[in-house]
View 1: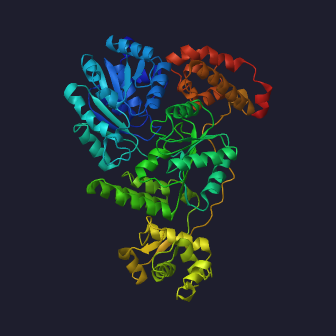
View 2 (view 1 turned 90 degrees about the vertical axis):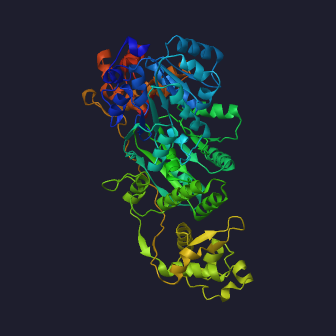
View 3 (view 1 turned 180 degrees about the vertical axis):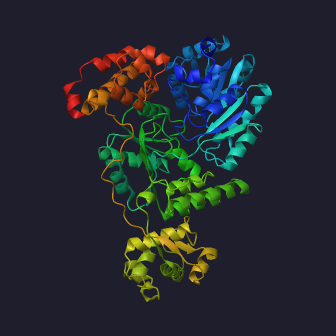
Length: 619
């Protein structure tokens, strides 16, 4: 096998195989713990290098490493990337070509396969476990391990069956990995997988390259268009709460000239496969999707994630926004939310058939998500707090840090809203309540004689958006709720509303104000860095584009995603430093021995070729 024939030290594997000069954060202690035969639970943010924690030990330890992974696309990307660096890896799943499956089975039986990726269903099916029991295994890795926890946001019952592994493979070390797990979920993962003696490695969940932002819905389609106009030519994901909404939004974006496509579980398999292939090809697409799209996404240059409906937990939110900026460059996130979203989520929770203990946990997570949307302090700090992590200071890169919201005593106005809802018999929606408060003689107000109420016109000094924002925040505070099964009428939640009506509590609320769209893009880290020795400037940007075109052609020829060959960050460094020899190229991070042998002379040829005039001018 690769590791036996070449290297035995983790640091050597990291440098010569993967092209990295050193480990990051918790990677090295986790790797060395696994190499020594210990079990581990690894928590690292998306893009933090979790895969190194099992791939390096897999190449150091004797035998084949088995990686349990939930998605075919994720397995295929990982296998393609490993083969690029000279590692014999394979995946067994329902869509694999029969001849490929035979080759993998032969290499597995002959002890020539370094890593085998397999779904939990395939692993636990008849025959697979028996076949593996006759082989020498290096380790078991359970990727996306939050799927094993009933308290997690993407629970998959079949993951629970992985608890059988230590019975059939005693002494084989195991590693569970995830990017999202609060302390309770961490304990559940360890318990469910029977990894009670495992060492836990936790990295910071803070992603400094992600800009978090949230805004009340005030015409979500227009808000989305405004956001996307600042991301022309970039790849991103727009999450919606329903299948129909993904298709409607994708159609609207297409009409406006954005290259958009829908993705949800209801699409036919061929359509989903084609959409995924386009996404993996490196096209600057906007994928409008339900949560069926995302887990296992390996594309590093996703520049934005937008939520048009509120996720049901901080874990789900963090997992989804984590699909942006995996390359470490700046990426934007936007969450649009409204009072109806909050009320609907609470209603669905009450209708859930989950056990009471599970529902209580789900309710806690939902309320944490609601609090995050209405946060008036550092939004990143609020999010990390949900994972038991505290920042020493505000992040400085979220919307609330960049433009601190204004808060004011809204106790009197809150009492006006609650009184108007009560006096109109708690059956009318927000638009009607706002009309009553502002003294507007609409057809509905006049038909029900609500112009005769004591609350009619008491809030005329405030504009309608102010009252809509106040109603939304009172819903978030649970002083108001929405009859989602009826006609959307507002009603009082007595336990929370009574103290406000009696003046026993002070209500401090944020003052909604339209956030001006940022006219300047955030500065990209490591973007087309100028090379002082070469004079820097435009030539480097043009050279970077030429390298991207070369990479695209190579990727198409091999039917693999371009980022599997080299990440954008590697190409930018090559364009900036302009290595003249293979030895100089080998010093660039991400250029390991196999890629140097496979692509080195091609890259040097690109660097010495003449840059097309069109690209030079465009740069």
